[in-house]
Image (cartoon, rainbow, N blue to C red; front, side, top):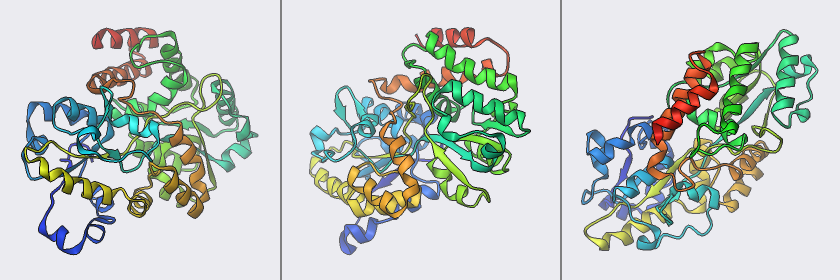
Length: 380
């Protein structure tokens, strides 16, 4: 989906004639699944430079609503493309604060989330049983590594993930990075080094395959789906594939270094309202967004996309229909926006240096400490 233009919804006569709910209910999910409506972190800079499809975000075009990947919201906001909720009066009071934070910059909120996905650890129940591992014992990095050692000794494979040199690699590393206590403003902290050292040690000991260096989240999932791996770090979007895997699975949060759940990054899109010279259009834009994000449409859209809804009310409905979503609702409630802490437009550069450091350390080119020191120097 990365690299495609974001979705631009205009207030067309057709929408007015058939009614908003009928016209837009489920429409967003279908478009996003088809690969439209997405602007990724790596392409965000094109908006500021006015290149390519990013031009749809410029002021005074026909779009009343833009749907964009959540880390991009702050980029567009700082470029003056989006209106804040102070301006458009969009009600976000029911949205979980940690999810709304991904769309905040400079103390203002720009839009509202459609839903969220995040990361956790899938596990193969049979592989753990054969290795004599009780998944309830996995509470921190030490106990997880001990479980991987037992699995390897039993002749199976430990854990797979994606460490590819793109935003996907940073996305997958962040739970371990944050779980160490590290902050994105200090990439070379001792805590950050411990997180990268953990991954490096797993490769050295054979607990994780060397393929993780080039794995996308899709190819990493394919390794887990082979049935040979005990664990895989992946997201809610694999739930349908998990049901078809042919073996019993479970899900646990990514553990933090010393115990408890690590914060994982939030994925998913925000519905935003661009700046218009005709401010009278904001009423129409607000109606469109209110429709897209009413409880029923959120439930329909998030169910289709395997997202967790952004409000407690709809989350409860999701869990009532499918109890397996409880683990994911818990993970999303503990999740964290990549641009939170007012990183906003600094995040893409930080992320790029982070994935480069991960690549360098896992390939053996540099030590975790040297790789992260270089990354920190590059973002200053």
